[in-house]
Image (tube, rainbow, N blue to C red):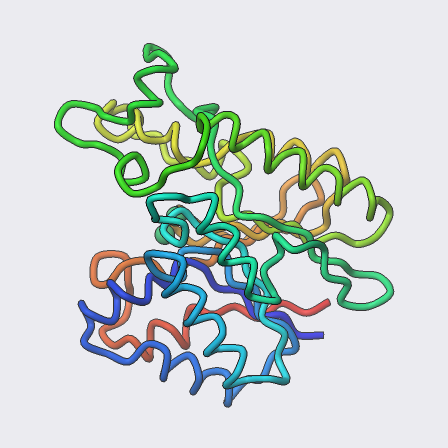
Length: 267
Ligand SMILES: [Fe+2]
Ligand SMILES: [Fe+2]
């Protein structure tokens, strides 16, 4: 079974900045490669209505591929992020609806996740991270995402949900998917508080702990726009974002960037 992996397409911004029909290119890639499953690790675009429409479009153009999705922070930018989360559950392949068994051996479990400041640096209070402002920059989620409670509470909800599913499928070969970062080694520390302060908003080590506790075979995440594919403690880790044009891309055209970035793994 062939599983394609991509996250952080940021369709709206990248379409505007490249003046290219990114969806058309994704359809073209699909027609050429036809994977059995396509896992999209969040940040499809900004706002739930647009993300949902793009996901439905992908699925309708390639009905023989099963598209699976977890939301990113940009997908739930809305005055009521809980309602945004619920709207995105209308996409049948949203892993927030429950685990998806690929065959007798393999199951995909996932949710977008959130952050609890556990990747933050010392010297700041919970309140400072919660406000999300350092000097003159405010983390965009603090302006555009609106959960009913604190960030930590939102993270707790995801941890609980994922652990219930992980324990239910314990013993199976599990592919775990979150948008947010599960392990500190994938968080970039620059020894500069102007950057490192915002690492608090990258994810939570608790997602990584869960994965190790339940012997997850493959962990797919996104959010950081740096590509990784490596083995850690017996777990295959894949972070495969498209990221922002132009500074995070290595090719001149959107077609080259998309076609060279989408990764196919086999189970
Ligand atoms: Fe992103
Ligand atoms: Fe993100």
